[in-house]
Length: 476
Length: 136
Image (cartoon, rainbow over all chains, first blue to last red; front, side):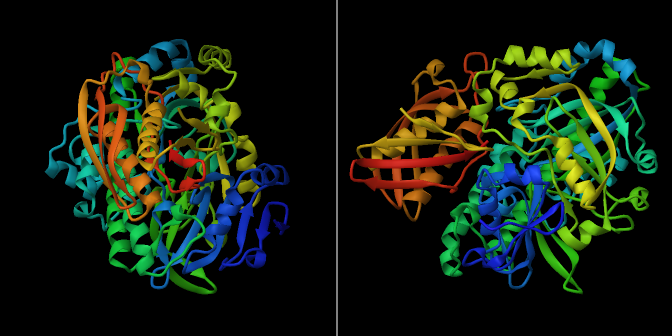
C-alpha cells in the first residue's frame, strides 16, 4: 500500500491506489503511530469507506484508528444528502456511545484516603456489567418519550438539572427521532437498561486533574489542578445494538434495489433520501437520545453516591457530553461553498471551534470541550476544538487511545488479581463485575493516549487543555 | 467445538460441521459460549426459534442475532440447539437452556451485535464452514 507523508502528522493514500475508491484517505498520525496502524486492516477499511457513493471530501482516519467492522474505529466520512448514502456500519452497534465529564468541588486530598469506600459506593449505586438492569421501570409511552426527548426527559423527571441538558452535544437531544422506527425488539432490549453502564470498554472513572495546559480554557470549564472529576463512558445499550442489527438486515436486502455494491457487507448502506435511509436515521436519532438519557440518569446516580459519601454540600457539575458513534447532518465548507452533509463519526469526536453556534454559549470563546478517555491505567484528556478541524476533518478528532491488542491477547498470560494489584500500586482502584472485564482492558492493550493526543494537538485539530489521571474505576 | 478468532476490537469464532443444520446449531452454541460459562447452565427450558435471510450469510447473522436477542432481552441462556429445517431463506430450530440467574451463571462477554465483517458461511469439499465476528 502506498502511503504518502503530507507533513509530519498527515498521511495520504491516493484514490488511485485501488479501483472503486472515489476519494483519498487522509490519516492523522505520527511516524510511530502509522507503523502500528499499518499492522491491522484499518487502512483497508478506510479505503473501503472511500468507495461509498456520494462521499464528500476525503475518508478520514484519526490517530487512534484501529480495525473495526465495515468502517474502521477512528474513521470519519461525510456524505452528500442528495447523492450520498447513510451506513449503519458507519455509526456502529453502540449508537451514541460517548463520554461525559463531571467536575466536582472535591480535591484529590478529600478522596484519596477514602478511595475504597468511594469505589464500593459507586459500584453499589451504578449498575454495571452484562445484563445489568436499572431501577427505572419505563412504560411503552415513557420509553417513547425518552427516545424523543433524550437527556431532557431525564431532567424533566428529576434526574438532573436544566443546566445538564444544555451542556451536552445537541443539548442531549437530536431532533428528528421517531420511536415508531425503533422495533419492538429494540425497545424490549433497551427498556430495563436506562441508567446502566453496560460492559466491555465502558466504565465510570474517578479522576484528578494532573496537568493544565490551557489556563483560560480550564478556567472556563471550571477545572483546576488536583480537582476531582468523573468520566462516564457508555452508550445506548441493547436498544442501540438492536437498532443497528435491524437496519443492517433491512439495508442488506435493499442495497440490491439501489444497485449498490461494496467491498465489505458490513458497510451496508442506502441513499440518505431513501425511505430505508430516512427510517434508519430516525431510529438512530432515537437511540442517540436514549444514550443521552442514559448518561444523564447515571450522572444523577453519581450525585446520589457522592452525597452519601461527602454530604449535601458536594457538587457535581457537567462539563460536557460528547458522542463518538453517530451520524449527523451538519453544515460544512466543502470546496469553497457551504453544504449540508451527513457526517459519520465512528469512534471519533466532534470538535467544533470557538464561536460555533452549536456549542453552549459558555464555551463559545474557547471552543467545544473534547473529551478523550485513555485506558484505565494511563490518563484522559480534555481538549478544545479548532477552526482547523472544521476546515480539514468536518470538525472531528479522535475518540480515545485506540486498541492495539485483541481481547484474547490481552487476557493471555495475565491474572486479574495481579493486574488489580499493579494498578493499586499506581493509586488506581478497579472494581469490575467480571475478571475478564479487567483483563481485556489492561493499559497495555491500548496505544499510548499521550501520543495520540500529541498528534491531534500538533496537527492543529484540537488544543490540549488538561490531563486527568484515574483513581478509581468501576466497570462491567 | 469452536475455534476462537483474534480481532483487535472484536472477537470471532470458526465452526465446522457435516451439514448446514449442524453448522448453524454449532454457531449458535459458540455464540452462547462466548457470552456465558455454559457449564453451569441446565437444559431445562425448551424454546422454539426461527430466522429468515436472503442467502446463507444473512441467515447466519439474523439467526445469531435472534439468539442474542433472547439472551439480552429475555435473559434466556440457550445451551443446546437443534436445527430442524433449513434453507438459505429460513430455518426453524429448537433450543434448550434456562433463564439467567446471576447467582449461578457467570457472564463472560457482553455481545452487542453480529457483524457481516469477514463473515464466511459455505459448503466446502470437506463439509460446512462458518466464520463469524461479533461486536463486543
